Image 1: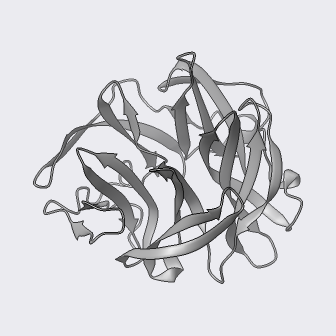
Image 2 (image 1 turned 60 degrees about the vertical axis):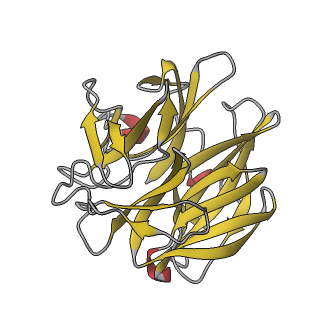
Image 3 (image 1 turned 180 degrees about the vertical axis):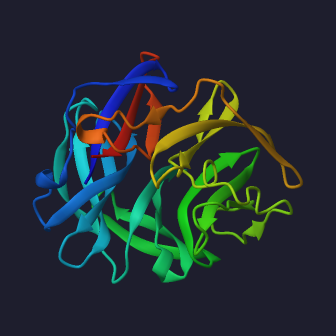
Length: 275
């Protein structure tokens, strides 16, 4: 039973919950019967916050993309399902580029990493282009040094392999990095766990620790080298940024974070956890 909460703090690596209970659960979903909510991504537009998340439809047993809104980032109101396909969707990685809004959700059974564009933000989205053919989990995209970079975990691997692609234009063509897969045979750091963070002129990648079980914790890696020929990262020494608390809504695990710095310098992050 995954739920969503809001954490805050003076650093994206030292965050605390705003309350002891989650801000969004399956019980807040009003338009479909929900089994859980997970994988939240934030986007701020003008003075409003928008959260996109996986909503697991309890009838179809497929994930759909839901929307919640907030005027302060702390209290949230569920609105509606905004994307539904005849296959499972999750991990709605939403981002803005040159005044337009895009989303790169996980859609393993679609056979491609598909980019969506907002026809009418935030409620109407349409598929725009298939960027990379294949079956991938948790595609995570970032703009760095005048290139787009895309990290994704291929299936049917057991969350232990990470591929890297790049392109000069968002719609491609996309090319696999010569070092890819950049991680092999490591369930503790391969699978992405949220948006890649750009902070203090550095890049940080959040990764799911899937040991001893899927979604046990979230670890942080600083990307030291990211060029068309090289890749290197190192784990930040503070330990997991999120982990199971052994009590309450996130007792059994946490596996996702999307952190954003606010105008006052403090950080706000949406996270998920399971009992």
